[in-house]
Amino acid sequence: MGTRPFWTGCAAIAVATSVAASEAPRGMTKFNQTCPAPKLLPELEKSYQACMRRDAAACDRFVAVVRELLPEYDCQRKFDASPTANYIVPAIWLAGDQALDRYFALLARLGTPGAREVFASAEFRAALDGMFAELYLERSEQAAKQRR
Image (cartoon, rainbow, N blue to C red):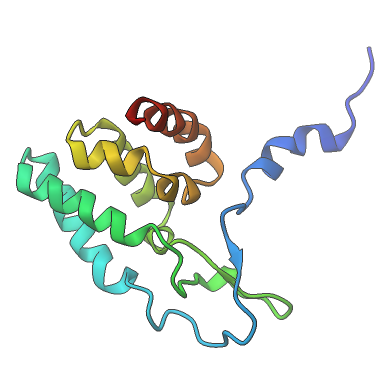
């Protein structure tokens, strides 16, 4: 009966680190200047709530706002900056993990053409990280293959 080395239990933690964050371009010293998250996240939550009440127009708006929030822009969370490096992240990440869990789950469930298009997109897959990549990456890739 042997013992496992300490690091073998850390493999899952290493997978869940921020792999989709990008190092900020050289010379970028100001962040969240053009990031649409502060303006669009309240709209995303509002459309999410209405979509959950089966408002079709709100579901379409939800999908449109998700699409707008997938790119990186100059978005940065407090912990994406360090004395040695600055990172930028997809704007939607500023919603936080609990909100992302709800938003991505709804996007995956919606059967509208727009939702299927966003879910199957490379932009959506680029915004997946950690547990979200584990939950949705393969399904998104399969959806993309089916769209071809």
